[in-house]
Amino acid sequence: MEDFKRSVAALPASLKTKAAAKRVLEAQLALIEAGVPGGDLARHAEFLSPASYAEITLERNTLGLCGYPQCAGAYNPATVGVR
Ligand SMILES: [Zn+2]
Image (cartoon, rainbow, N blue to C red; front, side):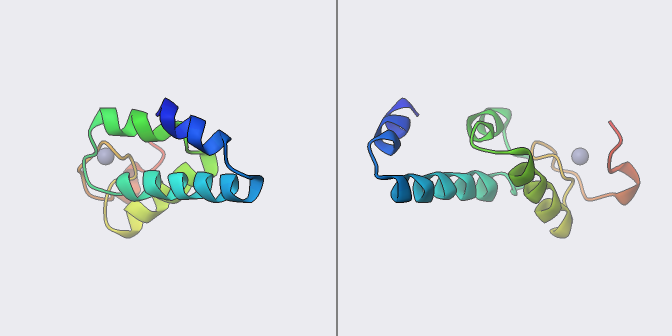
């Protein structure tokens, strides 16, 4: 991860933005799987904003999954927002 940060820091601004956007997309793709391991969630979380995390929740629900990445349960509208 430190290597990634160093290589991104060395890029021109336009490519930096592109690399950051790519990393967000990679995180989002990984976190729409059912039952993501906790370590994966932690590893990807630092690249996510509240808005990009909300997109994951929405995408998971659209796929019929619970919005929480570590959960392998099905989407249940009755439990949205309940903890
Ligand atoms: Zn769940």
